[in-house]
Length: 254
Length: 273
Ligand SMILES: Nc1ncnc2c1ncn2[C@@H]1O[C@H](COP(=O)(O)OP(=O)(O)O)[C@@H](O)[C@H]1O
Ligand SMILES: [Mg+2]
Image (cartoon, rainbow over all chains, first blue to last red):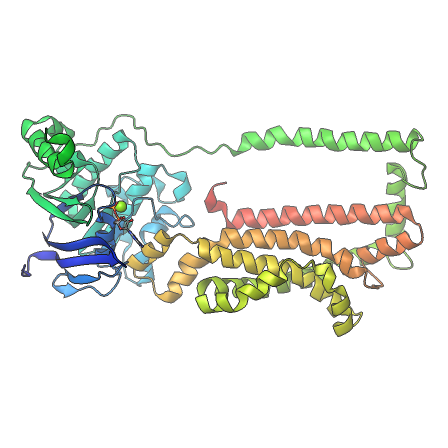
């Protein structure tokens, strides 16, 4: 796979082993500018490992990761992460959390963007609240705003809505699409929810376990904005069936 | 997709603090009044001889006498202030040295490995066991007492600060990394606030312990202080003074704990407890 100027993120034969155990092997993936790529797969197939490698939290034991054509050297603000359990700083107010990065890096004139993002994630009335005063969905919205504040090349999301109830999750999926429409970020989105992957993604990368690897990549061409109504369409269900077959060949192939 | 403006299941948690506080005070008051009543009955009813247990009114009068005339020529206020001063010095030193040492032990593997076993061995020794050594090395003056008052809270604070650093969530560290925090910023903006809850546990326990230890330390032939007053009065079979001293020690310790809790509440209000 060769890098083109369009690739925001490029993985080349990335692998990760813990001693004798191979968590991830031979993952190659090119993510275009403003593309949303969803990774689905059974738990333990190495989704988080892969995301942590891209984020720079963990080092790959093979292959390389390029952001905008440059190999990564460690974690940094060019790759913003939204974690599953909220990783807001509980001792900071919402506004302080969102601006923690730009303040640490001494970026000038961040206030206007922070205000805009607060409005975008509908937390303008909660800027002075502490995380404990927020609901789970509000915290994830604050996390998303904090990530967007960095103006990163890639937004990495590890099951960001996994801990939320179904209704809130639906709202968050809508909000993420609004954000994408507004800012066109490049997103790598991990989920174990196949419908979520199909509603959100431009592409769905299906991973398998033992060892963790890419089984297949599906192009998702449903027009945006997508609503949950999409999930009732026959062609949507056809894609869902294909992914289920890939993930559970024994159960679903009768 | 449009975000439905319908009612959501995702609502912020509600504070429920006031209800609890209301329910508890009267019951505690009933308990205190009950003990007072038993005390009056025991003394005035002749169940206990007065020379073994002074009655409440007697005790108040005696305390007033101690305030106005002093114990053995020293005003009660002096005894109180001397004890508070010793505690304050020993405890402040414990905070001043304990927090940085504990943080360093938690932050740097080598420091933790270097000092960890030593602290693990020192911790189970009751501080009172160091009295003879303190006296031998530092004599009977202030320094031996302050050293004793310093030691125990120091241990608590070091170990809790170390545990605090270790308890800092790795997702906060990762969040700091992805936000581009420098090592220094990581320490001041993530590790320090993240370990504060644990540090405060050490500080609060340390405050209580240091006040308790002042009595023990003042038993090393002090000439002033509440511990000295209680011990000396005991030798002279002056039970009223002993009781007055013990009550004062209790009340001051209680106030100290309230103050420590207040500091903790202010520093850790973001925990929402
Ligand atoms: N630090 C580690 N040491 C050993 N094995 C690990 C470590 N981290 C993850 N693994 C293993 O790697 C595999 C992939 O884990 P993970 O990436 O968390 O999966 P997923 O996110 O897809 O559920 C799992 O089998 C897990 O047990
Ligand atoms: Mg995972």
